Image (tube, rainbow, N blue to C red):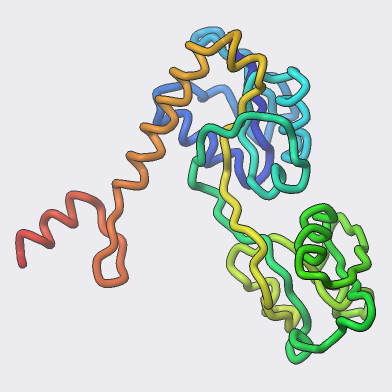
Length: 234
């Protein structure tokens, strides 16, 4: 029996989709339900639906054998887990942003105030560049901090950039790129190696099938069948 921790929120639907594509029946699971534990005896698996920030903790300390969580969370928490598979969905960037016109302002002589929910990532980034930084930890509405004068910069997840534009902010640096990752408890990987490797194999196959289902063609995305027809016409 495997126990797998899944991230509620934006990642839950694409996560359930990739499990379905891998041949696992997840019809009883829902990110909207108040239930947190979903036993699936027919596939010898129990799913836990938890906050994304809690997934690495459940996996690292053995509350779950494996989990799915964004790379941004893993970078922030530096959890001691295996990370055998990049699932490809949930793509976004961890970016530094500032108000338009203030992104190049020289503040090296004093501390830059940075608002973020990623204090470790932020501190590492600025320390590696020798820039003194004062970190202000926020849990939401990060983009408001420069607008009201609370901070000079923000470090936050950026998906489309529309939220930055809406607050007259511009991206001035990309710290890292994030996608959903499949992570595994180190002890479980030894004790339940065969079951976990089979799951990883099937998930990897499902991810590759999705990636190969579309190919670029003059800036458009076509299905493989459509791509073959297009080549045939050429």
